[in-house]
Length: 313
Image 1 (cartoon, helix red, strand yellow):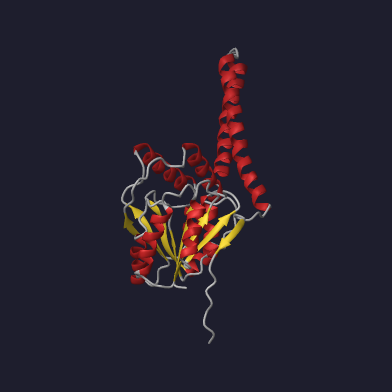
Image 2 (tube, one colour):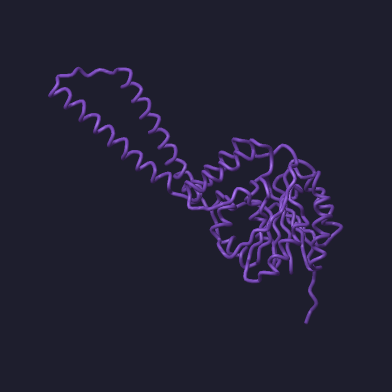
């Protein structure tokens, strides 16, 4: 198969049919040998029914129905596992990024046969001013704390070669952060300038974004643990110097030891720092706990796919 198109569905009922029509048209201008894979990530609306109706009309449509909501990134990895194309087009079906970008990405790879990924680069981040600021801070913090070098304007949609996807699927961690894995997988990756439209209120709340940042940092960097060591070393040094100052002041100058308020404040400060550090270590330990269970990315309840018989030689 020449081309696979992979997308996920969650609250996507209002987008699925238009997405299908547009991506089918774009794929048809490239090749007739393609498939469109819809992964239903436990969507509570009619997304699955709409996708299944498309499957019943078009043998090129494949629907992967997950047993529940496993999360966007896990659903994506599940879809990639079922993709059979030499090239794989990954895109959200919410139409924020145009399905017609498939032709841009595919053409970019055709012009650069030594490359394995063509991905979208937004002219500006999606969303309002606050969302853009938070997104910029997210990637600045992530790049500073980890060894990643991710661009805040990097889009989700991309076309990837089969060998790149096979390498990507070798990562088996359960706490996924796909932009980090895209970076770690390597190969030659080419940016393509695209635009996007903002569909309205995002499903990624501040709480979810903060959780994503913590997951990304603890998945791709051990620097927080190193910082804890240096912070403890610095606090020990400062407290040692201050203790020595108090002892010398008492022995040689008979100065009274005062400062009840500062003592209490210091105790609260050190206590807060210790709890923070224990929390960071606890996050890393919880990741080890989750990974050792070897649970699957997701559970597929049913696959809707038409088996096309190949002619015998």
